[in-house]
Length: 286
Length: 258
Image (cartoon, rainbow over all chains, first blue to last red; front, side):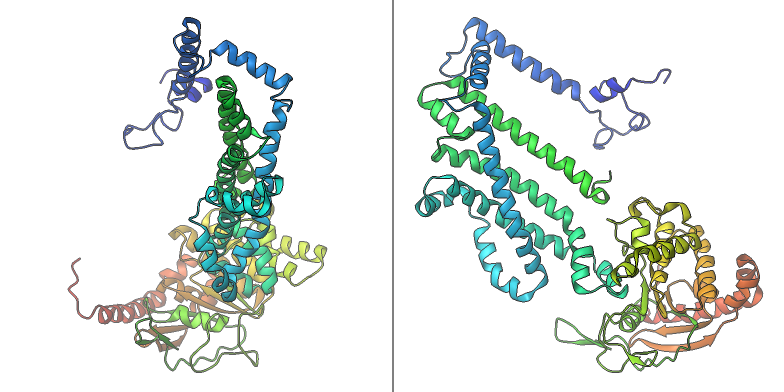
């Protein structure tokens, strides 16, 4: 190699990085193939380009898929005037708020519950049938019961998301406790630590990676659940926005809503990964 | 010590093991796999309750783990979420000792195990040998009367292992602790032990209990010289053949292909 490939070229996957350069076996070695980002960029450009061309020539009726210009105008109007007198950011905000509340309360109850199940035979015996029974039930199947109990207000939605997050968090915390290497616990005992100190300084930090996986999963599940719940009964939130827009045949608003739902879900995932790298560096290798 | 198996049978992991270890002695316990040496150590540490018999340390009967019996494990016993200094200071911190006093102790111990500049390094960034140095320092921070070592150097490469043997020997002499060391390596047992216990399997029992001169010798001469001396080689061959014959017995006369 006579010249060093630029960092941009490596990032885009146009050139081999210092690690992949020397490898001769590529097929079958996932770490030896280039990033391929150039193709990711290309596909997005091509798709948007196709959309622009199709809009210009009027190939698809606006009823099925909106033209790109009108969608942009709609986005600007949603951002400035809002949708049905509710600003767009409020639709987004209320959905995010519901998810965060659900996950928060789910973790608040689920983590101690999972710890108790991992540490005490009484707690394990008491809660195991309940948790194992509730776990495979999709949260959406609970919506009718939740509506009967709590109506269609804010409480009902947060209770639904709480339940969605609760069992995931319980199982994650329990897995975290059972995953503690016994040598670490033994080491702590022979260093004179009490049971409470072992819980606080050994078991809890050891369970953090599992708890984080649980948090990520619950965020994902709650985000899908909140949109679905808003489709059923809500006057605010991204889910309700696209449902109401459908009634008015506003395909552009529906498409914008779907894109926002995807972007926010992805953003939540990235944020969780970032936090995880900060808090459990020994597992993520940061 | 009798283990009851899930199938209903039972295994006599240890039988008639009676040892009297004077204060300050370094005892090496050697034996083929399955001879119950780790079981024995776990009983002394208080992690296992013997089905019969008792362990008495300093006049008090052992009923569970305690800070007066420190333990060094083979690997994986450090707390990855803590820095080197936090690991070493764990015992004093749990005992509620004053921060400044503990900090001074930690700094002193890190210097002694050769990790002076690594106080704030996360332990998962350290090499295997350095991690075991942390484990030794962490154990010493509690100033236990007895230190139990379960293959402390077993996961290290040969060169690091030799260097660490020197460190263990030095720490033992400096602190005057009673040390019970379990090892697979005959050479290590001979080099570090003041006294050698050889155990045999099925049931786990002591078949040899002898005094060794090499640890004392190594404090004065070069480690390599000690290991190459005629006495050392002779005892090593003797113990090796003892263990080899046991291993063959375990195999039940199976054909040795290699």
